[in-house]
Amino acid sequence: MKRTVKLSFYIIIFIIFGLIGMWMPLLGDDLHWGTYFGSNYFPQGIFLKYDGRYLGDLLVITMTKFKPIAFLGYGTFMTAIVYLIQKIREQIKAPKSLGLMSSTLAAILIFLTPNVIFKQILGWHAGFANYVPSLVFPLFMLYLVLKNYDNKNIHYYRTGTYLIFFAAIFAQFFAEHLTILNVFNTILVWLFLRKHFGDQFKKVLNFILAGNLIGAFLMFINGAYLKILFGRDSYRSLKGSSNSDTMFNYLRIQFSAKHLMIVGIGILIFSIVVLIYSLKVKNVKQKIANLALLLSSFVVVAPFLVVSPFGSRCMFATYIFFVTIFVINIDILIDNYEKYLLPLLVLVTLGLGLHTDAIAHNYGKTFDMQIQYSMYQNKVSRDTQYFLQYKDTKHIWLTAPIQNDANFAELYVANRNRNMVPINYYDWTDAVRKLKGKNFSTHDAYMKAFDQQILKKVKLIQAKENK
Image: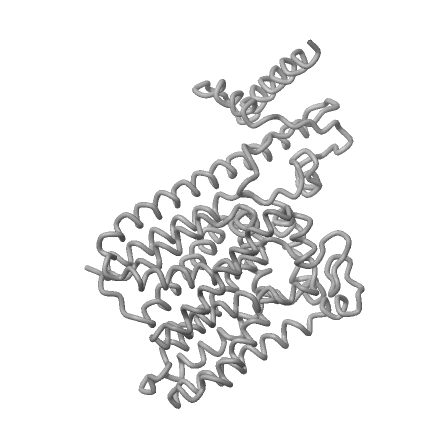
């Protein structure tokens, strides 16, 4: 019964995250990954000098080309993170009840990810493809360390060892700062915790270290990093740039001093509390988990002290590590009350998940309508091109207003010399409502009727402005 309930929970979480990926619109460079650039990326050897994120790039290409892949990608990697957080908690101390508290708390906090981070992770396929899958291995590594700590009787079959070895290699091809973190963490474990492992896991650990080093080497021999090193890359730099700078400059420009002070003090207090609590706690595995996650939270962003560009997506790993610390310790503290709290938390998780799905679905419908309307206007002779605005941009990474989006225009606007005029979300959705229930012989006939409604809206708006 317990297994069925837990499996059902993870299947539902998988579907919820999968729908976010399937419905979220293509934004920014997503549009290029999903068209000609992505199609030529590997066949024409562009990847050799673009970056070493080979698996991340492959994932974003397939996700932007095929919606079912986006569904599977979002569902698989987000569920894996939630699942691993629960498994880490269970290695520290076996839960008394069902064992889903950490999962539900983690899922809730992921759905509540600050919008500034959310929009570049779940609201942007290219951000997701690199910054989410790369988090799986650090959490998996911590799980393995806790599972094998002072447990020298665990046996690893050759097949399992080889799979872990290849996972250690492949984990290095998503995001550079996570690649560095994986090497850092594995060396740290090898140096300071090796004596607490059995002979079987020591061999596995050696394979992990070798895999991480091989993967890091294969990533960083990419020609792009030589250009960055010698300052010949127009986008990336080791000392920052005027357009997209290093971490501190980015934060200073993007956020107010008051906001930064509040967040900074909050992080400092959280870190001190975790440090003091971890040093006092008697459970050694809990101590290791807390300190490892806290250290990783800062090490993972340390490269951005000198590397640019830094964006809010680069804070996602730190956010997840903080979330993991919070949920596993809270879970352990309230272990006796799990059977009372879990049903409520499951309902909150489902509610937030369905709400996020609804948001993604709305964005996706807008994106589809934007394309259809632009393609229709390409066949109409006039001096103005109308663009349908999103309801808001809180959860998506829109690099420019839709009427000024060069990526969108390059693919879907035939005449870029026209006047580019935005149409308010509530105006164009009202036009859609007025056509609801009417029968049209063809899709073109529907778009023509929709266009006429938009023109009426424009006339009304112009009349009000001229009064």
